[in-house]
Image 1 (cartoon, one colour):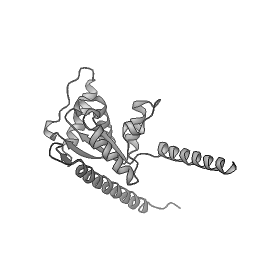
Image 2 (cartoon, helix red, strand yellow; image 1 turned 30 degrees about the vertical axis):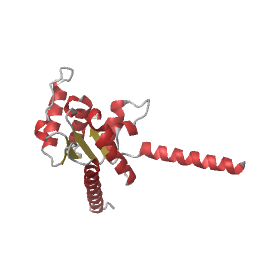
Image 3 (cartoon, helix red, strand yellow; image 1 turned 135 degrees about the vertical axis):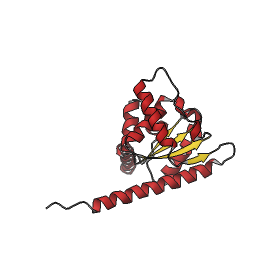
Image 4 (tube, one colour; image 1 turned 90 degrees about the vertical axis):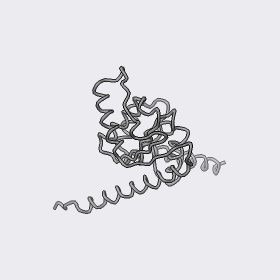
Length: 195
């Protein structure tokens, strides 16, 4: 009986530790995407691939739970992430949330890795949605232009293999995170020592 209780207690403590760690740890890569286009394909496959390699990516439906404040949780994840991954798709620019996240990533000077999925950079334009403020439209256009002129990956789902784009993107993301970590360590080593 005591042994059974200890096992249950240990299991509960372990689950609590894992949940606490996941909630408190900033994400490594923020996956910005249009749900209707890429949630069931590139975004989730990329999330799972990075998770299996020990990283902490952020994907809304994987990291958010009932009761979370949408903008608060997403904005914090963007500001704390190391790298942004923008998965552009045919309906991407119709989404306020996609463009808001992209503008926040660019505004925070995060490294953003674009993946152009079934869309060419030249096809991406911010739609004139009358519900969006002029300030939002200006921010969205600026962020989109910045992203369009960033070297990224292209993928045509009718011709390509999802595992290839996910593996390529993961390799680039992981390599970029290692570079950022090395840069941070070098900067830390070069800090003057105050006596």
